[in-house]
Image 1 (cartoon, helix red, strand yellow):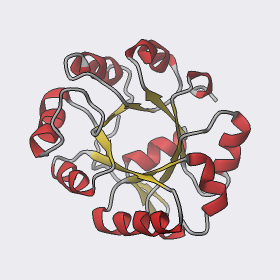
Image 2 (cartoon, one colour):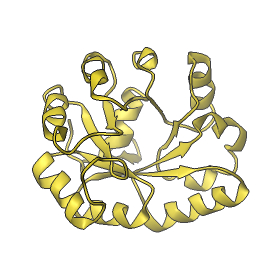
Image 3 (cartoon, rainbow, N blue to C red):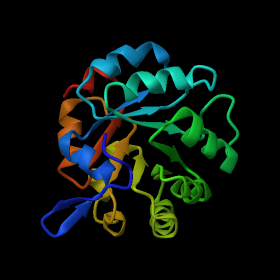
Length: 202
């Protein structure tokens, strides 16, 4: 896969690696259990997110995906056995070899950028105040992407999410059908992160 810092010119617009991969295929494999690794390996998804990985088996799993040229991100907040600090990010970047992280913590986004990792800020939309907070986080941390939960809400709040459109918006959570995917992608999202393997090849 392209180097994380690569910028791909499309006319007057430049896309980072994450944007480019989502443009090729907006569906992201979110893996909540290692038993789904083989299904993700065989899927058409360009990006995988390891949600609840164990630090003891993480390198082996990451190497499998790297061999297929997929972009591999890990959910920094949910890795078992890894401390959520700069040392943990350094370990992921230099030893495990991940391409990026997903996290709810803006400070980890900033650290990950120092290691040239792709970054996705995860935010939970509960009310109008949480939308305002998400916009503030985006402007402060400047992640490569924003993952919004529940993703099913995006069509209803798309106008309020406009200030975050400087980076790709990724929908996650409560997305169960192809019709929902189509509706979300038509209303502001550039990607869909799903743990339902039935949707990975849509």
